[in-house]
Image (cartoon, rainbow over all chains, first blue to last red; front, side):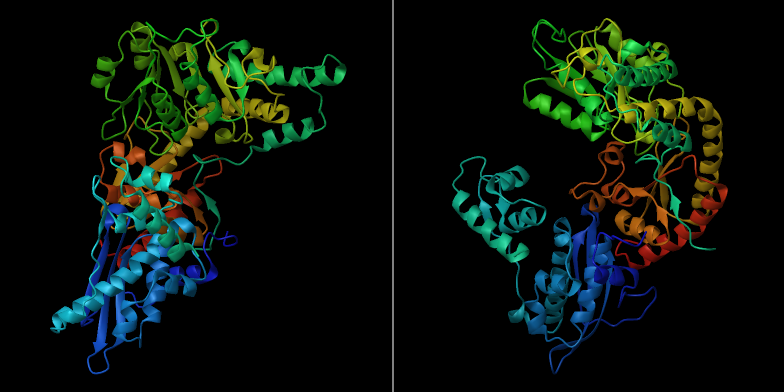
Amino acid sequence: MEQNWVYTEKVKEHFMHPKNVLKEGEDFQADGEGSVGNVKCGDQMNMYIKVDSKKQVITDCRWRTYGCASAIASTSVLSEMIKGMSLRQALVLSPQDIMKKLGSLPEHKIHCSVLGDKALRAAVNDYYERNGMVDKIKKEEAKIICQCMNITDEEIAHAVLEGARSYYELQERTKLGTVCGQCRGEAEKLLAEYLKKYFE
Amino acid sequence: MKKQKIYLDHNATTPLHPEVKKAMHQAMDAFGNPSSLHGFGREVAQLVLQARQEVASLLGAKADEIIFAGSGSEANNTVLNMVACSSQHCCSFKKDGQTKIVTTKIEHPCVLESARCLRDRGVEVIFLDVDGYGKVDMVQFEKVVVPGVSIVSVMMANNEIGTIQDIKMMSQLAHKAGAFFHTDAVQAVGKIPVDVKELDVDFLTLSGHKIYGPKGIAALYSRKGIPFCPFIRGGHQELGRRAGTENTLGIIGLGKAIEMRKKEMVSEAKRLKQLKKILQEGIAQKIPDIRFNGHPEDCLAGTLNVSFKGAEGEAILLYLDMEGLAVSTGSACASGSLDPSHVLLSTGISAELAHGSIRMSLGRSTTLVEITYVLDVLPRVIDKVRKMSTAY
């Protein structure tokens, strides 16, 4: 039954033996914490990091994840990647970096690893906030693209991750551009950008 | 306990019954086309007729009321699409120039998608609500099933939660309103008694591979004398109701599967009910914060659907798979879509509990030893998933 698993060996390994999970009752004094996602949507991640304040480097981390195998595996692999990483590097870590480490993920599972890098950024930002370094916080502000339907670039990215490959499919999923249609140019540009970012 | 390979996904599909395998093997060389007049054809035509009679007799129907189709989905698509036919020659589903379908929110996607497509083509479609156990809201049913409705389609037993509907009551109300009645009985036939006369239905769908028959074969009962509009045209096969050279081996396998269900159904249902009780009580005793989904009594004997708080279904499924245990889940993660099970959400449970649901469907091969193994493995897996979870 183990043959022909839906995921790569690496995903399987991390899923079966997840590293750095925050254990029950474990006293982990985190310098920064981040939580992203929503149980209602099927995945949520909490990331806890310890930081060497002199070097501005992540020395240790723990996590908790509510989600599927790829969400668990990508958080686990991420937790291995970030030990010893500078905060600056951590802020720009991309989903592709996680995916590269995992081998690959099925297309409809890529959004799980997107949550991982977001949880990490949230934890780093939390560290900055706790230490009065608010100027370093990298804000993730969603920008409204479709004014009529109130659809943001974040929602477009999400739709792409969930399988939208054409402007029409993007419209089907988000209802963007279905009123005045003025955002089409910008939406198509973003679509191409996200397709390149996540799938090339 | 030693690691085992346990199949608890009989609602997804079943292995071939040994007798079915034997019958198909024996028929393997009977390659003739049943439409041919020569001996090769006549030999196979006879086998196909026997299978048709077998299916008919289980349902209390006549052989010429049974049409073989390629799948339950095809049979269901056939029925729903009939109402969109506007030909005056073959169909009479229009009422005062209108067509209207009533179905439920918990149907199989092949019914839901067909209904939605018809809605896009101008047919009025009403999707009925269900209660917390998955039973159709009868107050709403009576309100919407009124003269003017062309057809009502309600599944007899739900594939995900096992809830069995009161089909007879619904078909009679539908007929009173002048509507035809179809039931998707893919999960019901061979598991509970299904008699088309007793249920008073006009159309009924069943499928081979859910009852230890082969895949790629299903049957559609259509009451004699009512309109019929073929979905696949261009041949005289199946009394002109389904074109295409018959899947003769599949039909022979289905016939044998039905024959075996007649012999085994009652005793197996009794056995499965007992095993499910042990499984359900064991889970309730060993694992906190759970919820059983589906109707407590009107439920398929072998179907158990349970939600675990704070644990995501796909993760549970894959950890169980590693332990050799095959189940299914209503989690969105497993389906490739954004939303968890439409059936579970329709019963009013939260998205979180729907994501955390596992369906175990028992069958012929299920033993007490297996159930004991499940009760050993499942609590450990749930504990492992919950310990990693943000939500427990």
